[in-house]
Length: 116
Length: 114
Image 1 (spheres, each protein chain N blue to C red):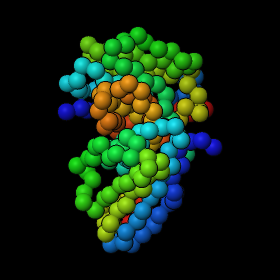
Image 2: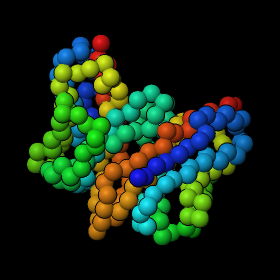
Image 3: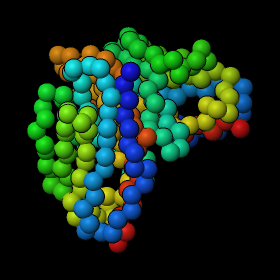
């Protein structure tokens, strides 16, 4: 399977705990995105990487959120001191960039976070 | 600011009916891309189509067709002869060239009944 993979698929945590999610993009894709999706809504952009550089970050991403993409391969999204409002599906997507064009994104299955 | 509006929250049709999903967008950019994605009950978003702002040709792919009209800032999606497997949430999305932030609409949930 050469699609985008995410781990874990489900995470239940208690308020105040830290959690970390992993995303493995399609191997030849140099762009990687994180989104958050809540019930009945479309995905909300969180952050974007081109190779290992984090080039854009949404204002939705508070100081408790941090993302990395070491060596431009897999990425991790960490949430510190989780709050109940962080409960959502966290989606990762990747795409290929060519000469400034904006290509379609391929999404992973998501990590569903429940904060109790 | 960019915005995507999908005014139809839910649509219910009977199999074999045609159905159109509406998408209206706002952007100040002259160059941008529009997308449609499908999110079936399994949850994983699937890319359907990309259209850039310079290409207003309508596109047909099997039972799917898309109507892009810059004059009305709309990018509507029609499914002809709908099938039960078309039941899903459909999202319209917008991004500008060079910008990496994609804005999604709230989605339209389509129910196709047998």
